[in-house]
Image (cartoon, rainbow, N blue to C red):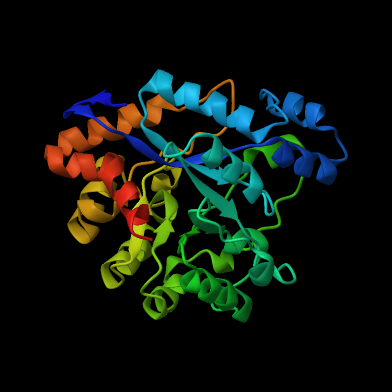
Length: 303
């Protein structure tokens, strides 16, 4: 499947889509003492089917509508890796499974099932309040590096907000001390076999994310979300893309939308804004193909 882009008929893969399974709604409901149905109503979202494979089919149809070839699906609560793995099993080659892991949970590294259907581990240091240099994180990374099918490591840095928690009246007791991409530097150096992905250009730590990418060739940046953090530094998206391309090149930039829920579905607006920006910068077709999908595919080709 190929999408019509400013550079012609081009395969597009989205490196950042949240897979809000029924387990995600149940987890939020437990925290605020509501049913999954009440959580969905409060958020204004469509409650997903109980079957992860059915939700995957909904996403596959949505991507077909948009002309998107493949997408990362992020399990957005710890312990929900079976949901995204079920999506990969139901639609081989269509999805990449990412799972949120909290290394602070007892035996997190030992209990993780690193199957070929799991493509990346997602770490949220500010959310779960830990440093990337914690020994429990190191245990997790060592296990990932030793796995036959080595997963990538997605590390959320910078500003982190979860709008649905506010709608449900739930506190977000995050700790920004652990949000700096520089905290990832020594870790990426010490684990050269692992590929690290930092979303949203560092989400407010743009300079630091560029420094990290410059020093570590195994670090990738994803472009997802509205990138509203730009207001902190007086930046616009054109400048962000230009400076990222100058430092990291087109070969380590991953297009993403941060799509997540229905009825909105896949966020076409993000794609339109980002491709117009890249076109305005005058990037060539080869670089556009790398950013829009080939880089993401390359991360998992020989893992």
